[in-house]
Length: 582
Image 1 (tube, helix red, strand yellow):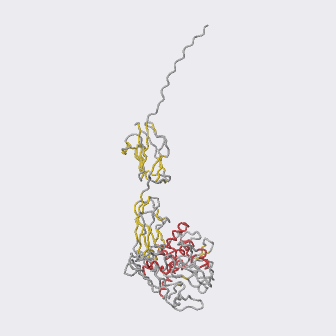
Image 2 (cartoon, rainbow, N blue to C red):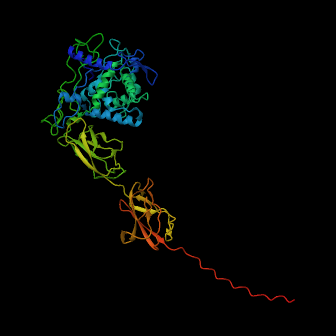
Image 3 (cartoon, rainbow, N blue to C red):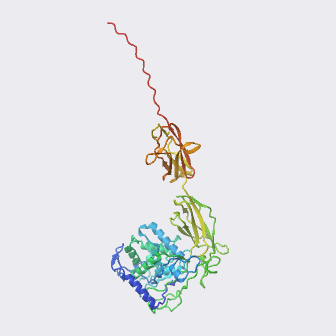
């Protein structure tokens, strides 16, 4: 059932305070007119620009919530297992909604890196537009439990936008309404909509789809949101009001100071809206949408205003061992029924630096009786001092459980940091005990070394070897790049001690050295050693090259005096010939 924006009565004191704060913020920026990337004028004054039609904005300049951020910083976050108070719920962001914002930021970072979209901006807009999807009342797929609709844009106190979608998105075939957690009007969603959760649909009521669409919308003109001017233009393009700009900026700054995740459905509901007036009628009932000709009578808000507790602090409050309570008359979501997570057969997690883990983490969501729970979003988070990531390039991933209750994480990719790190598995929107998996990254290794040529390595005493030693390293038949190696002139095949005579390398000062460390193969697995020299000792010598992983190669070096050609034997003088007789 559609849940319209709460048009709740607000007192004169709250109205005055909000107006004074926003007015003070607006006064801090000089008014003016700028031009966006599409050549349209955008005001930075106190009124919307008459040159920016409402239909060109994301929301149609629909009303928005005007609640201000708490004065107290959102840090420190409440510890796990504690009750989320209304103040903490205001500071926190529901888990699935927060995940959607961060996923959208990651996607835009890859597709439009020059935009520099921060997820905190999406959170600020989501707060102002829908109170973070009405306090995170979404299912595991990220779809709102009931539709969030703005008022009819019928020209009565709002923009006049006749129906553009035959009611497909907003259920209204006369006028358009803003739809979903990011409040897109149907005509904008038609071209701006995105599939953010990979289900093959573009649904404005899905927070993953809506957050990704909002990110692309804010980045559509090549704006760099790290620049204050572009940031203002992008926000004003979403809803062209200076008051809206200042309010979004307030929430952006607030979230940038730090926020925390709270369970889905426990966020506080905003109470003040930009079209409210002292003494205005309360919200129309969500089951009886308001009509411009016949205003509906007062009714209770569609959702409870007191946030539910997260799990873990009291018996029956939704923590491990008891199902999460649901409001009377509602059906528990699959997430509500999850009691615990179980490992689903994950084997040992080991990979070489720079490689991909062959094993993938798999966990299963279950009820208290051990029954599998499908369609629950499970989050995998890499923690610890490591540069490892998932194959997506991120340190977290959210995956929906399948019909067997199992969620399989994306493949893990090892970075260059060796050692152990942890992957934490939790249920999004539910406080139950998580699972920790230890993953180990070993140093790069090679199991085979071979010379790239078979040319003999010879030298005369006191000379230098004409050929340099070059080897190729492989591991299980594949190129072994960036593998650490050492090279040592040894005494004998069965005595790996460094030799004190024979061939040698030179250090930076030109002094003889017979052991080289800190060597590494290149990206083709090749390693070329520096030039070798010989002292005055003749004979056959051995050079041993060893790599991480145990690959070794022993190379023969020969030092011998140059062969000299034998002196030519003087030829016998020819016999004297008799002088001719006179």
